[in-house]
Amino acid sequence: MKTLVIKLTDEEYKQLEEEANKQGFAILSYYVKYKLLSQSPSDGINNSTTNVTQNIDEITKKLERKIQDMVNPFTAEVENLKQRVADLSEKIDEIESKKNEEVEVKHEKHQYPQQPSGEKKKTAMDILKSQGAIYESEVKLKNPDLFFEKIEKQGGKVLYTEKERIAVDVDFFNNFVKKLSDIHTSDDMEAQKYLTKQEHKLFQKLRQLGIIYFDNNIKAWKLSGI
Image 1 (cartoon, one colour):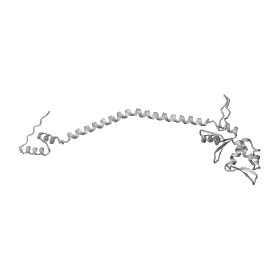
Image 2: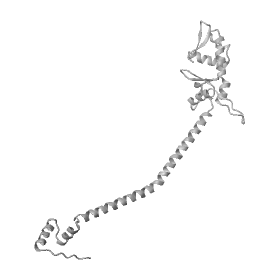
Image 3: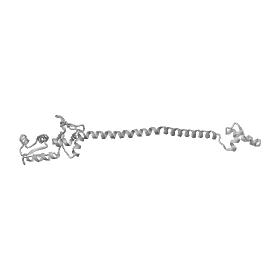
Image 4: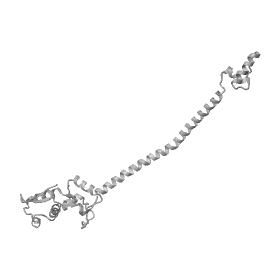
């Protein structure tokens, strides 16, 4: 450690002492050092505070990085689980859709005969063609909307009435409409003679709903509201 010797007059020494007292220095040599180096008394404290603050910032950043490193694997795992759940949900939807497409029409009044093993399973369109018409009120369906929507997509016709939907085979229905124009009697029993069993059933349904009526002007049955 180096020593610096300064010679002062009594007046200069007294002046320094007074200045040192005013500045709060109890020891004159500290005040001289302060004057020579122009160092504020609080600089040391401020520097220490700054260093502490910087250390805290560095520690905080290190902790944040450490926490982020710990969290990242869990975040990735959560994203992976979310993707797996989405995939499973999509597969379940596909399975449900297939089940609905393969739904069998079960008549509430009778069961269709069992098909021999090895034979191709009948579809809704196969049953519709054989029966001519399927009535919503007489069948049990898991998803009626999907059933009738599929009938239309596959070429069938759906009659939307106030009480129910009726799926009809297009050829069956066209033939039925043609026959109506050839029936010139309003008597139901007489009209039945011109129709098959399936056609007469449709005739009665549509007559009750007011969809077909006998036109006295042309003496024939007509359709309305379809």
